[in-house]
Image (cartoon, rainbow, N blue to C red; front, side, top):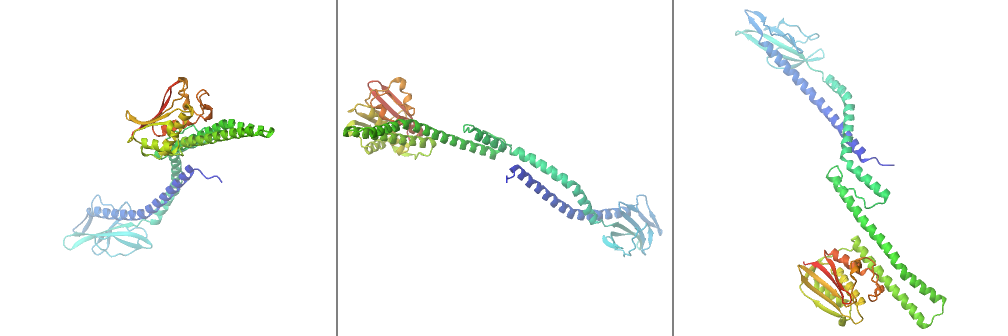
Length: 447
């Protein structure tokens, strides 16, 4: 079963909340309205009786009511009684037959044949001993009728109120989450087109959706890099492994088809061994480059003495000391990963020894200049033509056989060197003269 959309669920919850609030308000209004109506009725009775009291006069034992006196006003019935409690003026409400003693200035509730009335008596004196009673009566409002009226209003208003709340909620939710639709559409489009280079970009709808879109774009960026690195690895491996595999296969088929002499058999085994070593080196370099491209091999940056690092790396590689000329300044500190920088130096020295003359010397130097740390490796090889000096950093690019034993390499060493330099915020430069030699220099910021 497909789950409902988040917009529908939010709208439903808001609508239920609106209904709950409406019911609570209705109950509150019912509780308050009864009290308010009763209090208002009592106040109306008091005001009407006190207003009429100003227009009642008793002169010479004769009652007079001046203009402004009202026997019935706003539901209040006013009656005038003598001191002996005999009705002098006014008419009792229909059905009111209760006999209630007079009590000056106090609002009371009396029951007259099942009907409740508010009653207020005021004594209006005339002289020292004479006077009249002014009585006000008003029927107590029916709380049941008030409730019925509220329910009637609620029955009419609630559906309209809920409908308006649902429509308004859906519009607000839809407008607030329209950025989510953009993200979904972009994700579906990317999935259908298999295009990881697309990005969502800024979306409307607030900070949360913008952050979600940015995180999604970051995820796509990492996926694209990983996918491209995987594709490069697959393409590079399939392309470059084809030649050594073909050579090994041909050598094996030849050995199986013909009776070889011991010398030929040793030559075949040597060829297979060389090609296997080449494949091993190729796979190792490819994996290293792929890990760097994908970011799975992270820098473990720490302060390093570049001269000490170079000396330690060269000692660990067991190079022939007679073929190395070192000028390693001490105290030049950089921030970097010792393993990666050691690999960079080893690649440069390996290339220098490979492409230089058999008895040639490789110069390794560490110095500081122009606010940078410099690590240089110089060989005495044939040099690199000017038109090829920018291409040597490309993957699998190899110079022709005129430059020493070039075809023994896999064409990835300098690509790896360049990538390691970039990860450290540095750069590689080349100074090469044909017939003289080449100098590769790593430029790193000083710590």
